[in-house]
Amino acid sequence: AMVDKAGFKHFMAKEIAEQPTVLQGALSHYIGADGVVLPEPGLAFDQIERMTLVACGTAFYACMVAKYWFEQIARLPIEIDVASEFRYREPPVTKGTVALFVSQSGETADTLAALRYMHEKADKIVSVVNVPESSIARESDLALPILAGTEIGVASTKAFTCQLTTLAMLVLKAAQDRGQMSPQDVQTKLAALRGLPGVMNIALGIEARTQAIAQELSEARDILFLGRGQMYPLAHEGALKLKEISYIHAEAYASGELKHGPIALVDPNVPVIVMAPRDALFDKTVSNMQEVMARGGKVLLISDQKGVNEAGDGVWQSIVMPEVDDFLAPILYAIPAQLLAYHTAIAKGTDVDQPRNLAKSVTVE
Ligand code: G6P
Image (cartoon, rainbow, N blue to C red; front, top):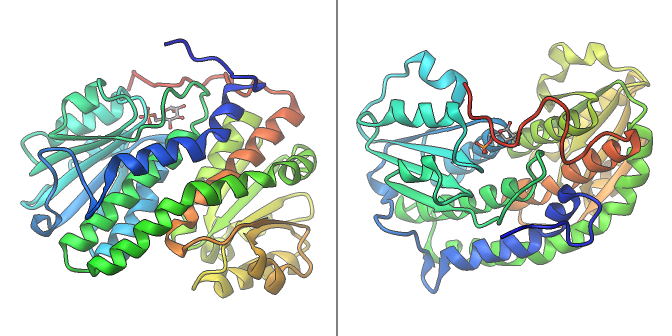
């Protein structure tokens, strides 16, 4: 079927706005009365010793978030790599390894080649895809659709949050299979997930605020993104979105790594965007943020109301996000990453849906 912009100025805007709806669809597809239900042949996480997650671009950052989740919540060791490096390092694959590939299109050449490298080597090949009839889906033992619907904007938005949501459900199943979470705790987390589309709707209310901030960001030559723990991959996704469509040079660093080099770049002309919900690591990130401010850096703090109240003094700008279960913050904080990039690109007048030099699906290595 032909997809149109449904009244939006760009496909990207439409795809950002439709996230609560498509997320809802993905959740109801996988969550049954007794928890997360996978299509046949399923996946028994108690029989897995480790998992290797491979992807490119935005899908790789979804893998990076999933690594934190699987390791912390399900105590499952995870290795991640970008597909273009994975097979050239000739990783040894031991028994008990499952390989999981994340791809919106299911046709990315490097990801498909990495999948083929793992044929015969991995116990099982799993994929998390948006296009169920794609090559990557067809060559997997188990293909999990993310149900984002057709994504047209080159900069991935709803596919990212649907990938994360699908992976989050997989993490809860893994935690339950591996005895790391009681059925009751799994139910609590699933309830939080079911609430996510509603919270995301509220989060979309930051749009006017991001638009105002984006006017100023559009003047910058370089922008830094900081995050710690499961928010570190979001810093990467924020920087990627921004460079893809606004062509502003943006870099992501783990908050704690800032002092090992990148702090040398900090001056009043380099905005530093800190993605930090008020979680267990918040205080650590705040002290990194203060190091930036002490050097004249201008900080945009993205946090919840508690976080902004506690640490917002002296920041250049803040964006207040709704509160959400800590575990789900990476999914919710994709919204400011997307909206900041979108409105910065609009302010610069670049082609949001068809950025220069980029392709929606890269089918050459
Ligand atoms: C291209 C797109 C990105 C995407 C990446 C991986 O670079 O521009 O938005 O994240 O490919 O694509 P895939 O279809 O495998 O998720």
